Image 1 (tube, rainbow, N blue to C red):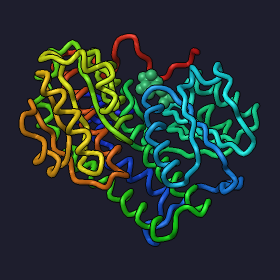
Image 2 (image 1 turned 135 degrees about the vertical axis):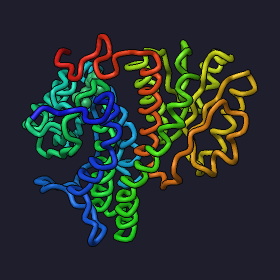
Image 3 (image 1 turned 180 degrees about the horizontal axis):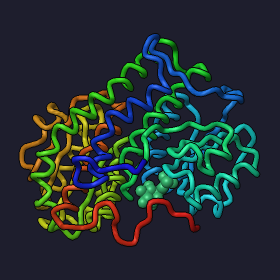
Length: 367
Ligand code: G6P
């Protein structure tokens, strides 16, 4: 049956709103609520022998991989290399025995990612794919298929596939950590508890849609936008900038907050909105001081944070967006929502073709 928009104006909007449901649906296959354990599909190789992980993907899927690198390294202490698929083969990556190569793709057909998969296979890597289309080429050619259950994604700019990819990758990282003896039972239960809080937290993030729609006219006239984030929220800043480019046609750059002073700070003036993703926590103070550097130069800051963060640093921003107070593990899933909604509403203000942006394709099957 054809997928319908229902009461939504665009598929992208519908897909943003489906996230609490599809993330829950995806998590159902990766965690067991009863005993709060991670439960992956049957794995036919020895996970505990994995010495190194290579992650390869494109676009939004690549940013899911960047977030996952933090998780694989902090939980399982396994070193991770990550590349965009179009660059991967050409740098002649060192692929040693005992390596796991993970390919992340909504479509499972992106040509560059598929070529990278085949290269890794020829070079003795165990192949895992995180795909949303279970019949895709990448699913067929994998040793381990980790499906996302996002359902068909029609909007060209990926949204719900991304948060589902994050859910799967978090579960995989925890599973690997358990297999390697780096995560004990209590820690595993804690991770699972946080993961199953994600759907409710996504709903709480969606509750702020009206605030985001209200501030979209502030961003719509901008020629350039800067997105800042730290730690696992840095890839979210990159994703936020990508979304603005894709559907709102605004030039946007995502930067690690602390790196701003090495270049982009030269661009700051009243004309360049700076959107800061900063959940309260250990990295918050550092990000706030980066924000102050922006404001001291007349920069217009939009702060996306939880109530605590906004109370501490919200004054003097041109707009703030409140997110629920969540555990850092699920913050990248939750902060994906305002990032997507902002690009969406800016695109609506500008009247662009949200679901079929110019020059872009849903699945890029040429290298
Ligand atoms: C295209 C789409 C993006 C997507 C990327 C990777 O550029 O417009 O939304 O993130 O391809 O696609 P994949 O299917 O491999 O995740």
